[in-house]
Image (cartoon, rainbow, N blue to C red):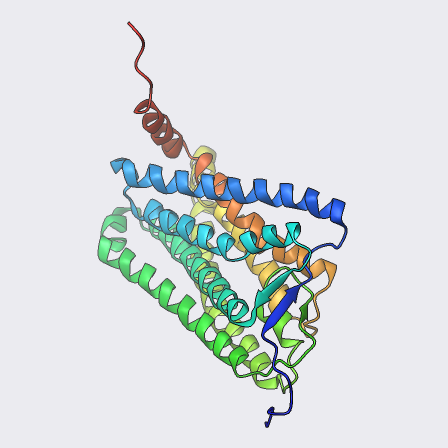
Length: 313
């Protein structure tokens, strides 16, 4: 398509969550607190896991990298959102928008596959405990992590390249707080059928493969737990994976609703759903996966004990 006679967009305007100045100050405070909790919680988990040798196990290996991806995932969008709450002109350059789109999909996609790796780890621990050490050896864990990163990269690359093939000649107002693909597609002045198909196909391929791995793992896990005769044993086994299962269901449910629905124009519900999976989930993961864990609590107390100030004589 010849676009020479049309002015190409060099920046986008992120309309965000509200135009009310008073409400924006309130939202700034709320999301600043959420972002601070996200950073501190996930960095604390990474510090504890790296410093305590007892936590150098496959489960915490994946949790360490999930915490890192949660920091990246949140940092891609929240700082720019916070800046826009305090400025009158809420702009982002076109290149910055496309970069945010790529990094958002990369960190989110990688995180999803790490969740699947964690589900497989729980399957190995609960369904085949006698061979767990051999099944989840260091090499297998590294392969699963590398596979998660490569899958996330391919997912992000496919959708970013398809967005870069589009022409944007106005309007340039994104009815969202970030440059997610659905929000960008509605602004293109060229045909968007191919990028829409790429987005839908990639979500189906990458999303379904990750979800099926998680689903099959949990089918075997639940089947094994139900065969445990002791009620205490069943509760103990299920407690190791119930929180993970809950987050997986919430994450996939909201993400699929956002990316697979026919209409791409963002509504208030879409923005709320995006907040849930892109901002709230990274904040809650340290609590859900770690802070309720006895081993992590013990490691935290040991870590804090190293920083006690000496008493004055």
